[in-house]
Every structure is written in structure tokens, then in C-alpha cells.
Amino acid sequence: MKLLIGNRNYSTWSLRPWLVLRHFDIPFEDEVLQIGGEGYKQVLASRSPTGKVPLLIDGDLMVPETIAIIEYLADGFPEKPIWPTDIAQRALARAAAAEMHAGFSSLRSHAPMNLRASHPGKVNPDSVAADLKRLEALWGGLLARSGGPFLFGAFTAADAMYAPVATRLRTYELPASDTASAYIEAIYSLPAFQDWLAMALKEPWIVDEDEIDVIQGRVARGSLA
Ligand SMILES: N[C@@H](CCC(=O)N[C@@H](CS)C(=O)NCC(=O)O)C(=O)O
Image (cartoon, rainbow, N blue to C red; front, side, top):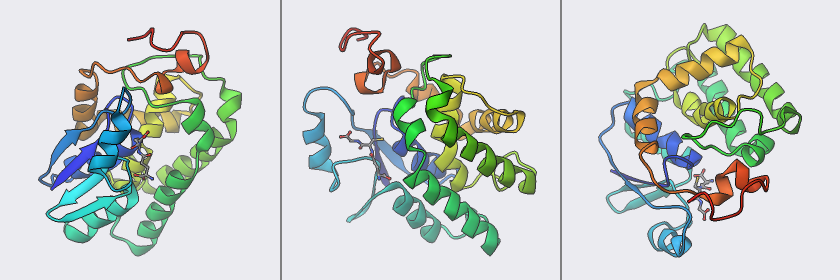
């Protein structure tokens, strides 16, 4: 199996299934297709039916869409606890994953993932207040029930879905309760996440569209390169 992914520093959707593959020790290779820079959309379109990453390739099969990739892995490796085993917890984990996929638009637009960066104070907490409130309620409720360190106790696909959000809270030092801070630390401590992070930190590419100083007009496009 092969997973086509985007730049590790910025590509939130790529991080999610990659974490599932790596954490659950499923054999795979990956290939980074650069997002950003001249002609990148043509390259993506020539490799992925949706023109987006992640894309899982298994023989002749190409599976786009993060949630579909994760479900394909859960179906293909039923012995791996990719979702919680209890049916009710499984439903809640899938609900949390779906909510992430469809929601949190303020956090996603105002606080782009940027693993190498540290930008405390640059995202106004008021602009993402509703998303932060929902995160606290969702994470807090699930962690209280499971006892942590992950949403359903051990790491599952639900945590993979929220890992990029955890990084946004850290990069921009957004307000977080002690419970949320401990959860963010658990994500950062996960060996699979550490592996991804180490590779992300070695990437040379700058994507202006995901750089907060460019987005907020402090720095001109192209000047960070
Ligand atoms: N709904 C898709 C979203 C995938 C997506 O938006 N991927 C971004 C990278 S994180 C992408 O490929 N962008 C291509 C572009 O910007 O042209 C999924 O869940 O996998």
C-alpha cells in the first residue's frame, strides 16, 4: 500500500491517515506531493482522481478522502483497534471524526497547521472562540469518560482526526484547559506523531497560503522563502 501525502508541515488531511497507518503498524510506503509552488495542482491532478491528498493506493484501487481511507484500513485490518471495540464508543468515535471532517471551520481558516512554527498571540482567540468551546466540551466529555490519555483511552482514529487541531492550539498558544493541554501533550508524545513531526521539521518548503504572517498581511508573499 502507498499513501500519497502533501507537505508534512502543513497537510492536515495527510497527517490523519498516516498516523493511523504508522501507529497501528500497517506496512505502507508514502510519497510526498508538494502542495504549493508552480504547477503543483497539475501534478496533484495527474496523480489523484480528486486532485487532492491523501490518496491511498492499494494495487489497482485508489481511495481518496481521509475518512474513507481510515474505514478501508479498519475493514482491512479488523484485528487492529483503529476504532474502539465497544459499539457505542465506536459510534461516538465516528461521530467525533465526522464532526471534525465537516466542522471547526474557524479554526481551520484562522489558524492553519504549521508544525515548524511558533506564533503565540497571532490568532485572536475571539475569532475561534466557538470552535474552542466545542473542542473543550467534546474532548473534555470523552476524556472524562475514558480517563485518557486519548479520547477513547488508547489511541484511535478519532485522535488521528483531532491531531492537527491539537497542533494548531499549540502553534498559536490558543487558550486551553488543563484537560485539553494534557490531551495535546498526549498527541505530541505519540511515537507516530513524533516520527511525522521530525520529518516535517526537515522540509524546506514554505507555503504562503498557510503562513499566518502572510495571511495577516505582516509579511509580503514570497518573502519568507
Ligand atoms: N476532503 C478531503 C480533503 C483533502 C484536502 O483538502 N487535501 C489538501 C491537502 S491537506 C489538498 O490536497 N489540497 C490540494 C490543493 O490545495 O490544491 C479529505 O478528507 O481527504
